[in-house]
Image 1 (cartoon, rainbow, N blue to C red):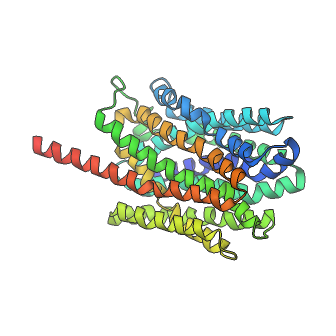
Image 2 (image 1 turned 45 degrees about the vertical axis):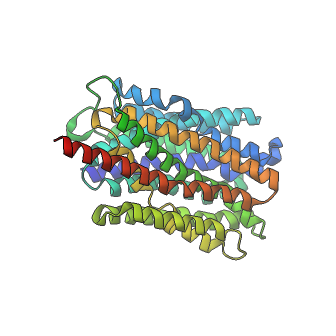
Image 3 (image 1 turned 135 degrees about the vertical axis):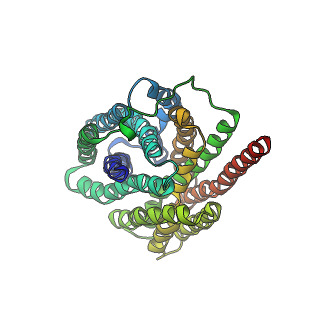
Length: 390
């Protein structure tokens, strides 16, 4: 049953990537229509993450008062509403408003889809399950990179927002009809006051930094990688196609990476190898003719360990504190994700060199391994101490 639930959550969560990618795919049209610069486009991309910075803790706490299913379905509906608002915009401010509304949905979906998978899989193949769930995000992005670019070119920049919103509404309907909690329970709701221990706070901090660094580097690649290729003579559509290869490849490499981690362990070694591959991939974007190789490095290695990092969040806290703890985890994640695109865009504006923005992505990828090592050191130290006391 748990694998059928995971398949349902995967299909529904595709809407996240599909809606997120709308702005990146039509950014050139918005620059033309509204006179924006790349920092402005980066800000609009980052606004998708803004609600998470302020609302992640209340969103996590709301799990005490409503079921996971209701909150997840509400998130998908908010994601759709925001897309429809952006599609009808007559100025950049309204697009920004739509992005913020979609960001509220993005927040609730991230928290409660992750919690749902943790509830179903904790203690059994959780890295594999989290890898599969997380891959729904690049799957949606890859669909958007190809589909949105074509739709915008054929019908205008508003249509990609509308198509993504329609998908989210259908996903909300499907999730409402078919999801149920494990063991026929409403949810794994907390039974005591929400209070994380000092160790849990430290573990969540490390996990959030690792997750934010991985995603910040990936979003920098998605948002500014095409500009690096266009500077070498690629057309916008061709550059989007090459960059999208990473997202398609990671759908499979992520699941394989999670399976390897569940079977053989050595997760820190896997992370070190993969982040090295991510940095190599980003560096190849500045080499003429190496765009496809760069995308393959990112897809096969760079973002493959997403499920391993996401599984850290499930390990960091007790089950009864999981909803609130996920709120803390995503607060850290959203802070990094909100800041990353505007910083990368500002770097591009200041230097005129897409490679400088890509270098910022390398720094974000490089931060993942130290954060994961710190997580494991704290976790192991606490287990040793507990064993000695026993």
